Image 1 (cartoon, one colour):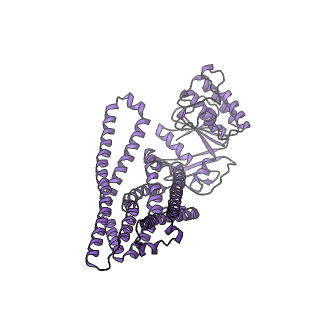
Image 2 (tube, helix red, strand yellow; image 1 turned 45 degrees about the horizontal axis):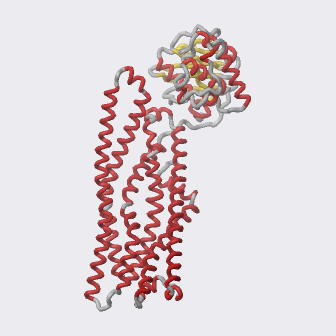
Image 3 (spheres, helix red, strand yellow; image 1 turned 180 degrees about the horizontal axis):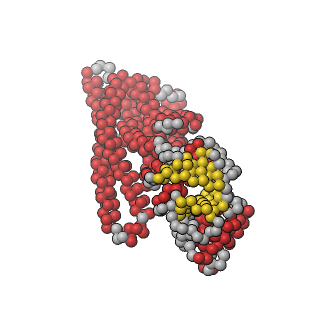
Length: 548
C-alpha cells in the first residue's frame, strides 16, 4: 500500500472521528464565546448612559432583569468568561491529546517499518539517517495536525462568524475586513515559501550532522588509535557552520513574517478607523458610538485568531518537510515477503549456482552434524552468512531448504529455521538472561543455567558470569570470551535446527574452546551445525569440509 500524507491523516481521523468532532465542537463554542465577550461589554455602556444601540441589542438579546440590574449583568458576564475558560482548557487539552495520539501512532509505524526494512537498504542509509525522524520531524508533524489542521479549521470557522457579524453591523466593514485579510494571507505566502526552502535545507544539514556524529562515536576507538581527532573535529565544525548559516537565514525570514503579522493587523484596524471617520463625515445616518466600540472590541478580540491564521504558513511548510522525510522512510522496501511457514524435516540445504562476488557456488548439506564452509577471505564469510539468513538478495541461483526456495518464503519465516553465532551481532538487554533468552519461564532459565555452567567449566572464578549479572549497553561490561559464550548460548537456546557459526574459536582461550567443542559434540545429533570460516578447523572430528 502506498503511504502518503493524506492517507496517514485520513486514517487517523477515521479512527478517532468522535474525539476530533468533540474537540472541534468545543473549540467553536470557545470561539463563539470569545465573540460574545466584546458584544456583552457594550451592554455595560448602557448602564453609564441612557442610550442603547439597536445593533448591540440585536446581536445579543438578553433578558430584561439583566438589562436593568447591574449585578445581574455581572453574574451574566462572569458566566460567559467562566464557560469560555472551561472550553479553552478543554480545547487545548483535547488538541494536545490528539497530537500525542497521532505522534504515538506514527512512532509505532515508523519503528515497525524500520525493523522490517530490507537489510541491504538499511545498511546503505546508515542508522543516523533515521534518528531525526523521532525528534524534530514528529514534532513538526504533530504541530501540522493540531495547529495546521484542527486549530486552523476552528479559527477559520470563528473568523467566518466574526466576518458575518461585522457585515451585519455594517456591510462595508465586513467587506473591508474580508478583502484586507485575504490580501494579507496571500502576501505572507511568498516569504513563507522562502522559509520552507531554507528550512528543508537546514533539516537536511541537521540529519547529515546527526548521522556523522553517530558514525564517528561508534568509531571512537579507531579515531583514537590513528590520532584522527583534529580532522574529525574540523569536519564536524564545517558541517555545524553550515547549519548555523542556514539557521541565520531561516530566522531572518521567520522574524520578518512574525513582525509583519501584527503590522498587518494594526493596519487593518487603522483602515477601519479611517472608514468609520469618513463614513460619519459624509453620511447623515451615522454609526453610533456604541456600535463603533463594538466593532473595535470585536476586532481586538479576534486579533489573536487573525495572528494565528496569518502565522500558519511556517507550520504548514515545516510539517510538509517532515511528512516528506517520513514518507521517504515508508517508501523504503521491506524485507522479502512470501510463504509464512517452513518446517525442516530432512534437513537438506542446497546452494545451486549462487553468485558469491565473482564466483558461482554450489553445494549440498544433508542432515544433522558438522559442516565447515571454508572460504578464501573474511568478506566471503560475511556475505555467505547474509545469503544464508536471507539478508542479501540472491542475484543469481537458488537457495533451498528441503526443496523450499528462499525467494518464495517470507524473510522472517525463513530465519525461524536457523540461528547465528557471530561477534557482529549485539547482545541485547541489561542482564545475561536478557541477552540470551526471549522467554523467562522457569524451564528456559533452568536450561540456560545448565548450558552456562557447561560452557564455563574449569574457567577462573573471576571470569564466571551468572544469568542475573548486568552486561551494560552492547555488553560493554563483558570480556571477549564471555561475549563468545553468550553468543553460543543465545543461538542454541532458540532451539532452531540450523546453527550458523562464524569463526567458531576466535577470541577464546583453550579452556573455553574445549568446553565449546564438548558442547557442540552433544548438540550435533539434533542440529545442522555449519561452521563458516576462512581458516582450517582441526578441532572438530567427523566434520565435512566444503571449499567455497
